[in-house]
Length: 235
Image 1: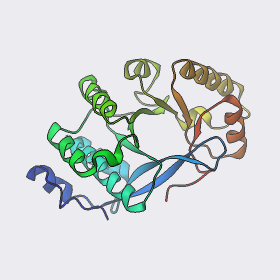
Image 2 (image 1 turned 90 degrees about the vertical axis):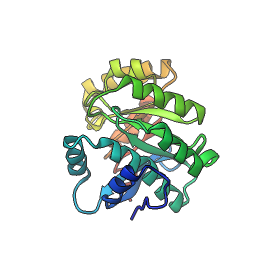
Image 3 (image 1 turned 135 degrees about the vertical axis):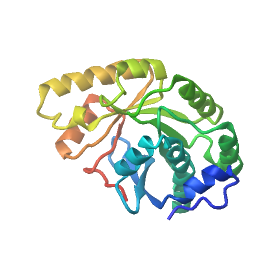
């Protein structure tokens, strides 16, 4: 179980965090050999409901900021408890960001230990806030970390969004890669995307790879990184 009691945060946010009962699991992102871990994605797991139910509940109550803070601090707590040394991917709402006071606490707790080790993944919902994104860019650059667009091809994360956000990494949604070994339209689409993103210095992750045939085909297309049940489930 993740606990936030010892964090010197605002009393109101601490009380809100204290209402949560959550754990984190991690799913690896692999290099093309299918064995070498490039990063671990932290995935929130509430103990009494699904994560989508939790997000919907907090979205309706206009309290997504509580989950943003919980994810940043909770995922890092779980990451260090596990003793991982590779990068850690942390999901972030494109509509939200840590306050400066919260960011200062995060720096106080983790400082140089997370320099160059974090990937902040911008989710495909609920909406995009350009001012918050600029602040994420600034803080990530200072800490020599990376920015990623999650689930490209679903929700709000499309080519226009990538051009605005200028991320280091784009993660292709499962819908784009499912059955790619035998669907010509998907083959051409993903090939074009890989060429486009590589021309701009962006790494491409194939998400939701569930079959060996999909994995082999995507390796052949030059996709950089891979994530999915074929390689490893969240644990």
